[in-house]
Length: 318
Image (cartoon, rainbow, N blue to C red; front, top):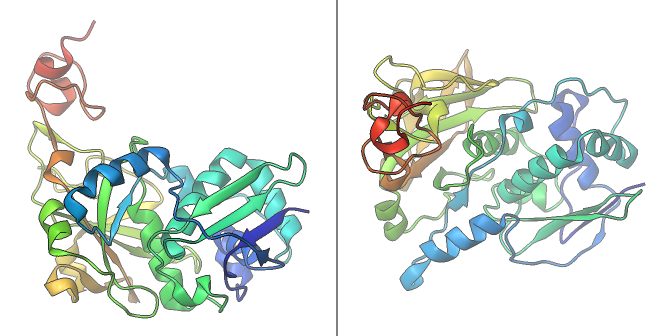
């Protein structure tokens, strides 16, 4: 049987309607022994980037790093009867690499910085340790059943951390935690992450979908970004279709602003259901432009100056 350790318990009040995310987190909260609390990052690349961004003692309270694959949001094919550590072990063993990635971001969103959650694979004794960061579900992370607000904010946080290119870039996360407290943000963070990007909302646990909207001006034909799933171009649609995320248009058409000086959204409504969202901001440096001399992962070779045929950066195609 797998062993789960954590500094505090995650709540176990989970219904079977929650699917795999609810399953794995409910199991994480059961049968737990005390564990160590560490402030280490689960992502070495992210740790290096965060250190570089923390220059001059600036505090980036809502700073995180994306990179979760969209497979991590798709939990199809799992069937289970009840919530048990055996069920978690079966889920984890089905795809350990993906499960480890998913748990890295779940704990990063749910658990406060300075705490970790660990799981030991029973057959290999391999220990997986995931570091907390944003602490968006204080009640759940402390052992209480997850509220609807906590379900929604974790779903939104996972969606905000996805990246179709698998590239880890820093994002600034704004909004409220599951108890309604604003995510702290400094003036320095807002100035550094100056480009309003997207809003993310939904509820994976209640199978109510995941949604993304845009805040930014449309990209022109020379521009591209790894955050392409909620960033529109001249067509009025995102550059990439990123199921299970559904693009729903401009955030301001669906969401009510509130908190962080009006820079974050308080709630977003789609299909008659109101959700608690996460609002993201990025640095201007995350926007690639054909002609800057660097062939970015978002650009392609060609014979033009558009992002998908950028001769100046990526050369002519063979």
